[in-house]
Image 1 (cartoon, rainbow, N blue to C red):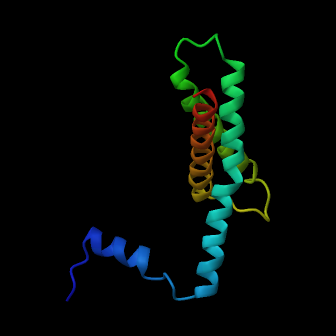
Image 2 (image 1 turned 30 degrees about the vertical axis):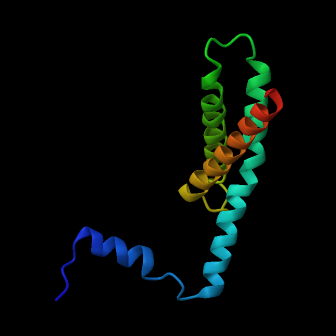
Length: 119
């Protein structure tokens, strides 16, 4: 008789239904990828915009990427909360997490590009 501990339950939840329906799983992976890729440009332009807006006025410009990331997280949360009254849309925490990951990717690429240009 198997012991139902938290690790066993987590394993069943995360891998129990994976790859049982390959078409649905492929569609989920495409959805995840598009959520990340959709917010990468938002993070990129947020990082550049914050750099331009606060250049010379901010004491610590190292915090600008953090402020840009916070802006992107709040923007993503706003988009998800705006879907609540719509019956044909679904609000999902995964979307906020994946959009935030895409924003971080965009901010990181903006920082790399800035360092390459300024070097």
